[in-house]
Image (cartoon, rainbow, N blue to C red; front, top):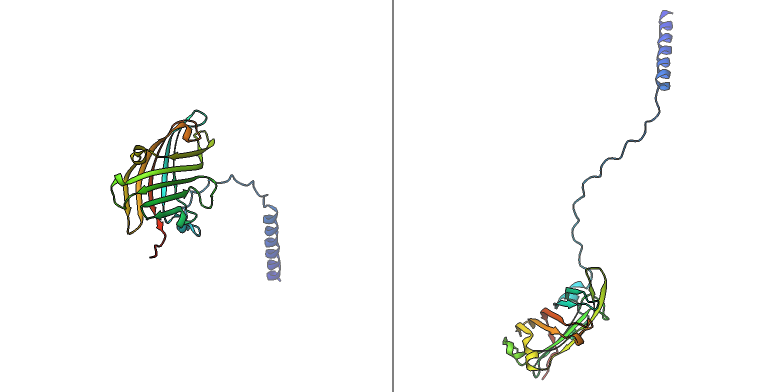
Length: 220
C-alpha cells in the first residue's frame, strides 16, 4: 500500500513540474539585426562567343583615330576598331589584274549596314613592299557616331578622295602585302579639310589596317 501511495505521489509531482515548466515559457524575443553581407564570390568563366562571331571577325580590322573639333566647337579625339564584315568577298576584295586594287570595308558593329562604316580603296602597281608603289585613292566614313566626354554624340560623315601624286602616296606607311597569304597591313595618316567632313572643321585622321583579302578565282 505504501508503494502505491509513493508511486502516485511521484506521478503527481512529475506532472506538476511539467505543468509548471510549460506555463513558465516566455514569449519569443524580437528578431535580431541582419548580419553583414558575405564577401563576393569568384567571377564565373567567360562565356563563349556567339554563333557566327568568328566568321564575322576572321578577316582582320581597320582602326581609325580622329582628332579635331566637333560641330559644337568642342575639341574631341576618338579611336575605334572596325572589325566586322557582312560579305567577305566584297568587304575584303582584291582585284589583282592588271594592278592590285584593294576595296576594303569594315563595320563597327555586326549586322549593321546603315551606319558606323569605314570604306577605303588603295592601289598598288605590284604586290611588292615598296611604298612608292602604293597609293591611297579614297576613304569614306559613313554615319560614325562619336560619343563626347559629356555623353552626347554626333554623327560624322567623312569623304576624302586623293588625286595629286603627293596626296596619293604621302599618307601611307609600313605597307606590306603577303601574296601567298593575302595578308595586307599598312598605316595611314591625312588631314580631312573642313569641307570634306561633317564637323565643319579640319580633322586629323590616322589608322592601322591589318586584313586578309580575297580575290576572285582567275580562270584561263
